Length: 309
Image (cartoon, rainbow, N blue to C red; front, top):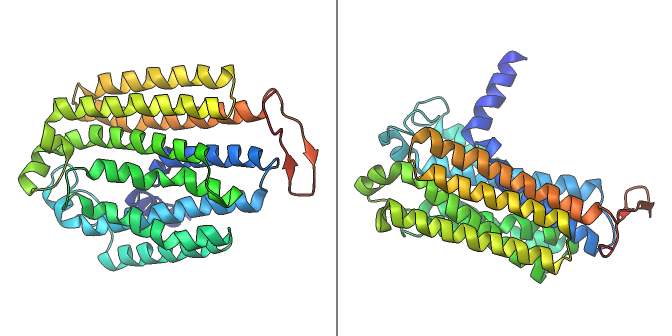
């Protein structure tokens, strides 16, 4: 059993499974709002399928990223210890994980609904293509934001099966949020990326200017979250949470300007994880409280209020 746990931990670290905490809460928040619009909880089956789709899609994309970037990772002192350059995982095993998780994602969407299944191949292409964009454009961070910003839209479609304004706004917010903090993360590699000829806004604009752009992106993201609350008629708890998120954003950028690896990691992981979790909490509270009422429509469906009183 300890050996199995070590193996699972190694593979989880290979695809940075902990970083799922970034996009997953936003996807679940979209699911919660979509469920309210449908006047009922979508059921355990859809909930688990959304979770499975998130994990399998992200695993496929992350494995692909590690595979295609392995030669650059080997040359970068910061990333030379990653599993593929260090020989801890074979390239054949990495490809197997990538392909199996991609197939698992397609199968998962098949059991969600026809629209999600039809869009699934396009979604896989978009999220995997990010790994190649740094060879083609300096705006790779923007592309990553768009790719991962698809998560809340996917969760909405899983519940509703149709597009709407609310998830589009949330998708744009997540795209800007991820764009901003990926720029912060990229400041660690500005010298290496410049020497290797890799695209990056940090290389193109310099650290100071790119961090200003990241801060602007995060402020616009915050404004979109406020609009998201207005559209969905959320009340005080939601906006109190947004104030906490705004304080976290400001603190994140204060830390980023210190440019220490230790502080960048704090800004990148802990604060952004906090932001996403807080957002999920305030959406759940806004939907379920104080107008929450439980009326069992069937063994798997819970009715939620159509509006917040």
